[in-house]
Image 1 (cartoon, rainbow, N blue to C red):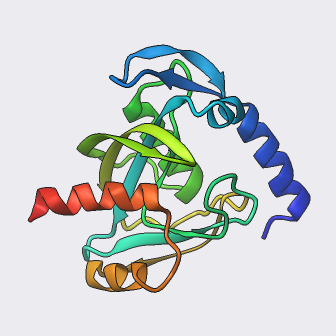
Image 2: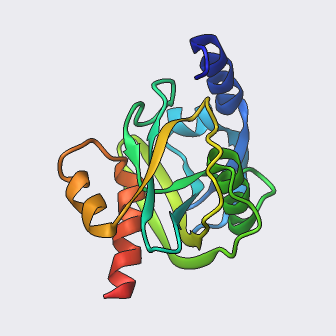
Image 3: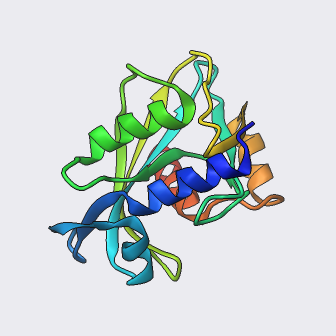
Amino acid sequence: MPRPVDEAAHRAASDAEVVAWVDEQDRLLGGVPRAELRARRLIGRGTYILLFNSAGELCVHRRTLSKALYPGYWDVAAGGMVLYGEDYAASAARELAEELGIVGVELVEHAHFLYDAPESRLWCTAYSAVSDAPLVLQPEEVVEARFLSLDQALAEIRRKPYCPDSLAALQRYLAALY
């Protein structure tokens, strides 16, 4: 488990990362530090990767308390901000590797949508991936993770705090299936 100072250093580095800044039509305008994007309520780009195992169970994980958005919340997707100069697919692969240690899997794109909430404005691309490889959690971002059936995950979402942005990605994934 990371020490609070490790999480604080990771948070400071994350806030300084230069991320893609886009307009309402997802046209690239440039790059800005992540903290500035949030503070000015600019629109960025984000990726969401729903990770399943071969049994069809969804990986859910709990975020560290040092996260800028939704600290301590549960999450149905790995993912994060697209860096300036990076495309959605490269960002998704990087985030899946960083957060859950999953590499070399096929990413299937399911949705591209605008998420506009008071705390976050993002053009998002949602992906899914399947892997039975052991999870390697990024301690500065992920406290714990486990796989649940979709029914179990949907029931848990009603009882525990889950990140609303990744739930929007899950909703679009499920809508495409049914």
